[in-house]
Structure formats: structure tokens, C-alpha cells
Length: 158
Image (cartoon, rainbow, N blue to C red; front, side, top):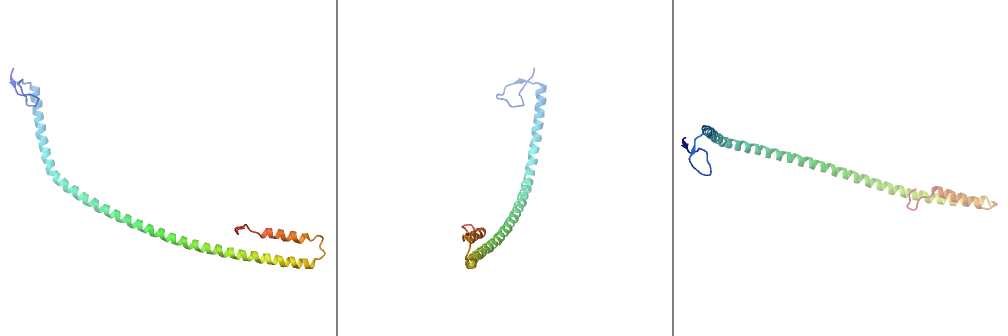
């Protein structure tokens, strides 16, 4: 039996018998390690190129983000202007409708007064022409009924 030191690390170093399987796996392990070192060297050289490529990608991405943000702000500003114009139009329409409502209310009140005046004149004429009325209640009833037809609610609505 031949004693050799193991090529792989352990917690202590002591002579051990050489097993060809262990020796073969050690060689494979060393081969993997050396190929890993080559990969690392290759990666390090590629890392500089990757960093530059990433830097270029970041620069392009930032430029794209700035352009997108600018376009968004422009769309937002245009939308706000459209909303302000719409608000202005609606305020104008509201003022016009309010004025029309006020004018119609005034005209309605004027017509109500005129109807009331004409009813009283009609009642006077009716009383002059019909002095021998049965009970004198029919003209009063007609007057009350016609007022009910043309009367409005207390707030001026029909």
C-alpha cells in the first residue's frame, strides 16, 4: 500500500492510501477549476464590454424615458386646456340659461298680473250686465275656477 497526500482539502492533512478513483476525480476537479479560471478571465474582459453596453442601454433608456415623460406632459397639458375650454363653454351656457329662466319668470309674473287684471275687469263688466243674477255665485265660482287653472306654485313654478 502506498501513502500519498490527498490533493483535495480536508480539515487535517495526514497520509492516506492512494485510491485511483479519488486521484482521477481530483484531476477532473482541477481541470474544472482551471476552466473556471479561464471563464472568469474571459468574463472579466467581457465585463468591461458589458458595462459599456449596459451604460449605453441606460443612456438610451433614460433618453426614452425623458421623451415619454415630455410627451405625457404635453398630452396632459392639452387635456387640461380642453377641460378648461369645456368648463368655460358650460359656464357661458349656464349664465345664458339662468338669464333665460329669469326673463321667462318675469314674463310669467307679468302675464299673471295681466290675467288677474283682466279677470277683475271681466267680473266688473259681468256684474254690470247681469244685475238680476240668481244668487250671484256663478260669477264668483267662474272666477275662482279660472284662477285655479292659471295659478302657480308658491315658488313661481307651474
